[in-house]
Structures are given as structure tokens and as C-alpha cells.
Length: 152
Image (cartoon, rainbow, N blue to C red; front, side, top):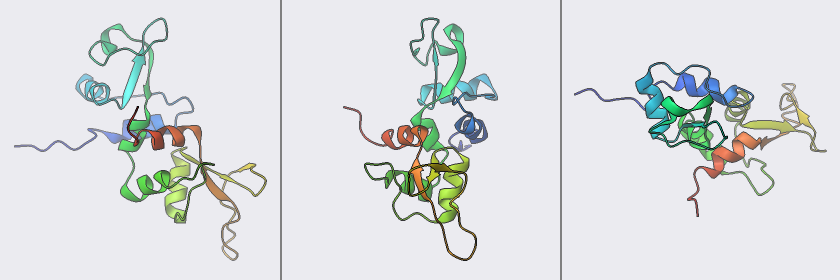
């Protein structure tokens, strides 16, 4: 018996995660794409802009496939999940290691902000004084964090 890794090919989801609009730019086979659709990792809209059910998205959809918060969560490891789930009401991450924050920033789930709230490219660590900027969830990061909470 073959055990299927999940998600089937996360490189496609990683690419969608870093895409500015969250578009799935490649997806491998139709089977892989259907798994993504069935599991709510991506979606596709109809001509009117409404999300299609997974069963018909490949045949009736218009435009790109878009990654969901669940799709973003599917590519994260345990420390990354814990970090985005630790965000406070203002979206600031609590106690997160720099490698985890840097990985989340590369996935566009986190951005660094200075004391005035202005986004910065890095945490500002010069190797001597430590980080100067804190990591905050981006809108995509907030969507991924919300995907863990039960929808009511």
C-alpha cells in the first residue's frame, strides 16, 4: 500500500503563497489540482466572481485558482503554525524565533514593522544588537490564522 504525502505537491502551494494575488501558477496533474480543490486548499470563481464548488471548478471555472487560508496553513511546519496562531489582536507575533519569522516573511505571511508601524524589509538585526523590527501578520497571514479557527 502506498501512503500519499499531504499535500500532494506543496511546491505549487508555496508558489501560490508568495504570488502577490495568491494565484496558483502551476498545479501538476488534474488529480493533484482536484485534491487541492476538494480539500479547500485552493478555489476558483465562476464568470460572475462567485466561488465554485470543488466538483465543477475545473470544468466551469474562469480565471486563476487562488490559494486559501487552509492552503497556506498546509505548507507550514509546526513552529510556523504556532507562530501565526500566537499573534495578538494587533497581528503582532509573540515570542517567535528569527528563522521562523524569516521563513514566514518569505512566504508573505509576515512583514516586519518598525516602532512607528512602517513596514521594513528585514528585522533590522545587524548581528550585534538584535532585531529592531517586530514581525506582524500580513492580510494573507491573518487569513491563514483564521483558517485554524472554527467558522461560525
